[in-house]
Length: 101
Image 1 (cartoon, rainbow, N blue to C red):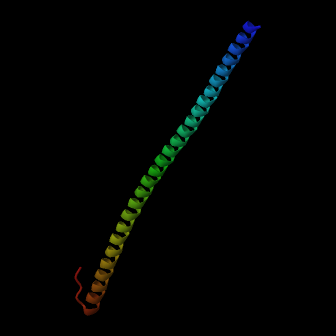
Image 2: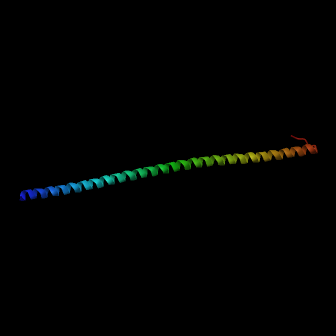
Image 3: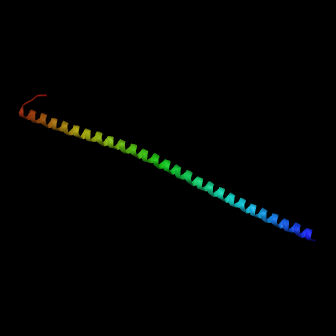
């Protein structure tokens, strides 16, 4: 009888220990899953950061291109004004009879 009780007691203790181990394993598994999820979040954040950086670079290039185009346009406008002035000057010269090219 006592032998059987001791055996049952040992079995109960073994079962408790197995249950504790299963519980620890579930916790470890949850921790691994949480870590995987966090890693994915970090990767996605890095990817978004890279995308934003690329977009900023593209925008900077577009802005540089626009600036250069504006500069060229100002230069062309200035040249047009100069040409207009020269034409007016030629016209005045023609009207006064001072034809010189």
